[in-house]
Length: 179
Image (cartoon, rainbow, N blue to C red):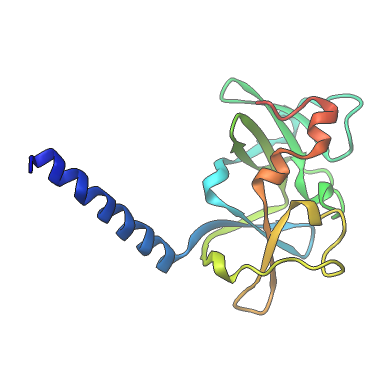
């Protein structure tokens, strides 16, 4: 057997070991505040960047839903900024000098999710995510919710679905979210 053939047979084993190690450690999530008391998680694999955005650099766009703050020049591209809390049923952020934005990318769609506060990066096991049930969360939140976890302090951690957010019907209606 040639050296390249031996190496190719070892790669799947290395990949399986990496997957198993990843499963043991759990997946990485960004933890942030939604509204005053809501705690949300977003898988790190959909996040391109986390940044502080000066409010005076956000260009408002007329005739957009209230949750759409406007557009921002990000890396020379137009990034739509959305108050994710307001989108999913929490009160609007209110005025501030700066906001925290999470740039997510799902396929060719890039969107900036504006949040009150970013807390940390955490690891959680995907098999620990509970399916959301009707009545447990606000109806506006349900389409964007992958599930929830119970945190170490018995807090409810909402696991958001990045793909559902990026493909929200609101973006198609208003021709936004195409990066």
